[in-house]
Image 1 (spheres, rainbow, N blue to C red):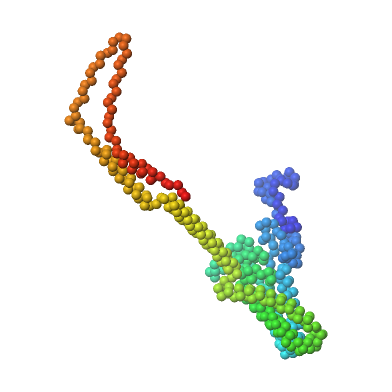
Image 2 (cartoon, rainbow, N blue to C red; image 1 turned 90 degrees about the horizontal axis):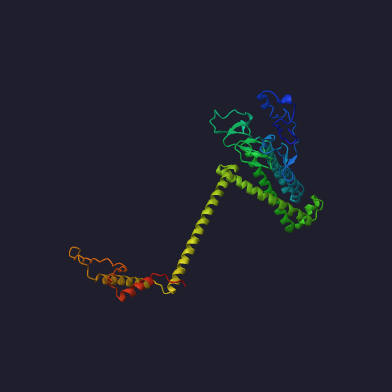
Length: 421
């Protein structure tokens, strides 16, 4: 195994002498892949990971070689986790050293009590949420279904090689299956599941309450700096070593801005988890449902676009038909003209048929006289040319009247489509 955790594979006869390569087929097959040493030397674990720090990089499809995380304080720590610790310390010092001393004496003691109780709840819930192992109990006993007697639906995890609850999910960051997986929290550097979700939600609500109290103090002191400037100035002289009023207002403004941003994020996250709790749903299930809903919305949008395109095409066809009808009407081609032409065509056809039927019919075959026998022609004399045959008599054919011909001509003209425009 290399320094980066890669397993060395030696396929073929790259090394060794000829005697080592000879032997039975099983021996050669066993020696084709070099097994890693029994106790490989692990690379050093970094202190932090996350932007701008890099996480440990493993070969492709070998991320399961990463060590299984035990809890949120297991190295490497995440950058957001360290940032949360710094924010806790910052707001704690601000409340005790700047805001509380500027209050009246009674409210100063009340603030000390509120901050003490609030920070005990915040730090305690944060610690319990991070230190509690949210893993599925089935991963401690590989290839053993501990839920068989309980009748709980289970699934087999190929990475942990264990039977887990159907609601559990394998987390790549922690490299273990989490019971009733909700999400992987980078602020805790641990997964949130069924075991530590109550501590996580307690941490959210406690932090939200502390930030609300901090914002209320900032609003009160900022208003006091204008309405009761003299009283506040005396308290600043006595307890804050004569801090100028301008500097105090600037400090309160910066604290209010940071607290307002933190309060907004916490309020949104707390409200989101309250909705999930009301729906009996986890964050992971909500993400899957949102993806399905997004796919459904995309399909509906595509269908609406196709329907709108078909409607536009139909409107264009109708407009083209209307323009063509207008052009035909402007050129003098109308329905009335067409009907009149059709009537004249029918009359012309009837007149032509009457003209043809006015001729006498030929006599029947049984009454007709036999044709006269042609006289026998004498052969021409020697030296004379033969006599050509006589032409047949012309046959008289009845011709239609002039009115019928003119009507037929008009009929052919009416069938022609007039030019547009």
